[in-house]
Image (cartoon, rainbow, N blue to C red; front, side):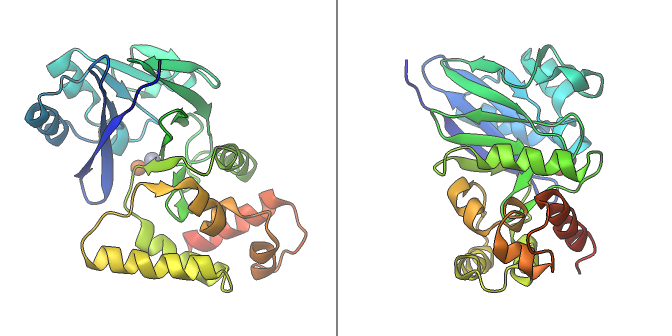
Length: 258
Ligand code: ZN
Ligand code: FE
């Protein structure tokens, strides 16, 4: 059976996005990475939606901070990666790489994407073209490498890159403008990137969100998805080198970028 997802962006804290979604046939309502509870419960309430699920991508406080309060208020089921269950508050259901998790009449493929943390996953609703990727992939960026290795992180990004261009990237932070400022210092002759930077600046000047983005656009412009591309390799003086090393260099440059 084919169904849709109604997805709502809830901006919280300084730059987090919590995603609230409803699958209309079953009435299931999911929250992806509730940093906090209050604004999420209020938004669901306002819409008359009853939260049935929390889907967590990883253990950081700005992704699981609202778990317990939302679970207490709604009795919802908390879903997260089994291998990191000790760090996911209130977890009820554990999933693993390759699992198909049924959310109402929709289905998410669970993709294990270590790098930002060693217990990070993404939820890919392929039919609905929605990718919830937490802090692994950002619009024009990627998460900081807090726990994983460049090898792990690059492999994770390669797996996300293998998904269809039409997927929308529902990442967890509005970092796009500063990511763009950095990206243009890497691929200085990528015209699609320059144009995207300009439209991001314009959108932010109007106070608009830049997330979700389109995965196809990320593939063409996000330097962290392009460590195997000649333009990026040449730009960091590493032509023909192992993409893992190139990725590590680009990640390092972003870490020290001001
Ligand atoms: Zn994080
Ligand atoms: Fe985060």
